Amino acid sequence: MEPDFWNKRWQAGQIGFHAPDVHWALSSHWPSLGHPVDQPVLVPLCGKSLDLRWLAERGHAVTGIELNSTAVSDFFREWQRLPRSLTRDSSLMRGFEADGVQLWQGDFFDFQTEQRYPSFYDRAALIALPAAMRSDYARKLRACLDHAATGLLVTLEYDQNLKDGPPFSVSFEEVDSMAGFHAAPLERRDVLGESPKFRQSGVDRLYETVYRLTAV
Image (cartoon, rainbow, N blue to C red):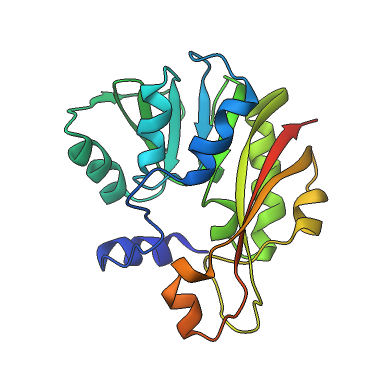
């Protein structure tokens, strides 16, 4: 999707993708990955997710990448934190940090880092992108990670003929074939009952699937 699409969504307050609670997949499955509590975590296309706070409160140094400046400022304001500004040489992004969370505002494809992250979390990044962009996203994510880095990926599965994205439907076959990663499904939940907009669009099956992804 073009940056203007997401900026207009934030400007109009059309952010139904923002969850008011920590995502169930994170609280249920993150501990099973066995990451040390002080291990850095990369969170692409993070919005103002409460998941960032959950990770930081457990000791992780969190790096989130978010396109929209309103999302970044709202995150710290709603957390009641006053962030300090960060600078990075040759970066097209503005950075902000408070209490273990760094947010870099800009396009994830422009994110430059010498650090290779040992862990990552993707709840709403891959499914926010149309099929033509997802392989590029996977390559960019892999380039930011250590060999054998592990993380959680959360996807949606539904009949794309009944409702256009975003969020887009991403099948197990697509995840399983992502270059640079090995995928292991952890849990699949029927979430249609929690998704009135999907039901109103005629969608009769909607699943959320959680994967353990390992960089190879």
